[in-house]
Image (tube, rainbow, N blue to C red):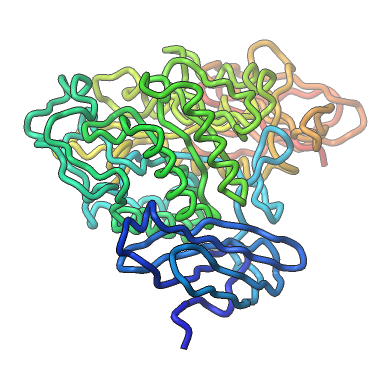
Amino acid sequence: MSPFVYAKQVERWDVFEISCPGYSDKNPFTDYEIHGLFRSKSQTVSVDGFYDGDGLYKVRFMPSFEEEYTFEVAGSFSDERCSGSFTVTPASENNHGPVRVANTYHFAYEDGTPYYSIGTTCYVWELQSEELQEKTLQTLKNSAFNKIRFCIFPKHYDYNLKEPRSYPYIGIPCDSSVLTKENFLEFNGAAEGNHWNFEAFNVEHFQHIENSIKALRNLSIEADLIVMHPYDRWGFSLMNAECDDLYWKYIIARFSAYRNVWWSLANEYDLMPQKTIADWERYAKIICDHDPYGHLRSIHNCKSFYDYSRPWITHCSIQRQDLYKSAEFVTEWRERYRKPVVLDEIAYEGNIQHGWGNISGKELVRRFWEASCRGGYAGHGETFLNPDNILWWSHGGALHGESPERLNFLYKILSETPGIGLMPVQESWDTVTAVVESMAGMGSPVKGYYLHYFGFMRPSFRDFHYDDNCQFEVEVIDTWEMTISKAGIFTGKFTVQLPGKEYMAIRIRKR
């Protein structure tokens, strides 16, 4: 009986896994290797495997075609070699494959289904108690969020002063009682008492994260993995280059076969002076060399933008740089980078002391609509004070703000867009007008669909004239009250009556 364990079939874009016993007398993370080679009539893919504890190595693969596949597993992990075959069945109803860049500025699943990102940030939700994690997943299930940003490493910052459920390495953490929010930058991972073996991963930590990725996948939510960040009292941000590279290769081998994974090299990379641009470029090369599936890749700023024109970057992951303006710059950034613009942090709905975490729900929803009508995508976060210091932005749990249901309403509007994506056009100086993106993402807009957003402007009526022959169906949208009212069908010059209140939009569609 073969000691290698694998299934005989897997659905398209799901995870095919081979479990292999092997040597563990030395350090299995550094002294032994395992690789897999997968072939079908349409593709040949080579992947790295990884050690998963208890003497077991694993190789994972995400098939892209409904075909018969063969595989071979080899490496220094064992004297035995494994080969076999399996069948790839059609994808299930909610499995559309990984998300790709589409139409230059937008996204679609690999099967061609448009993907309109309504993201949220929940930095270390998966490192909280089991009860809180389940509550987070239930909240996500009942929301419009289809992407969530979260960290692999634990986080130390305001409202995040407790120890996580697990650590990524074998070792001993420092005594956190000596640390406060005032002195964490002084320690920044260098506190005495931290003793980690950066060449020995805590496999239970990574098993739990991949279970979280799977739970999100089952909810059709993209896992935007933040691989590095500066908010650290344990030393994980201060590893040397060899340990950094070992970490990158390990997580890519573990996680890249999951179709809902995105790679975010860092949250606020520019707050990590110990890492150079050469370091970030080296990490990017590791992703490009070892992730055979080409998952989406980006890097997130605090103040200074990374060079988003770099060829390895698939989309811009942006934190606003201006206290007042954020989504207003989407048009400029689209033209500069010619890539999807995702405003992963445009400030959060809440009431904490920090300016990035105390805007109103109305302002957050306005920024979402502004970004969407300019052909970009915005990200949500929530930071309301509460007695237990459980803030959605980092811990998950329940949502308390006014924006989530309005974002669900926006998502429905976006999902009704013909084609893939919106692009801005200059119809008047005081509104943001979106039309359907041209199919090449570079040519003239596709006529016949117009979405006018007025933001904090309050007109009582608006005049329009497109041509004298076609009929246009007109709807008035109250983006805050979440209503759509039919205004009529018009030809030639026509006037649309408005209630003279903020946050209104008009949708015009040629019949």
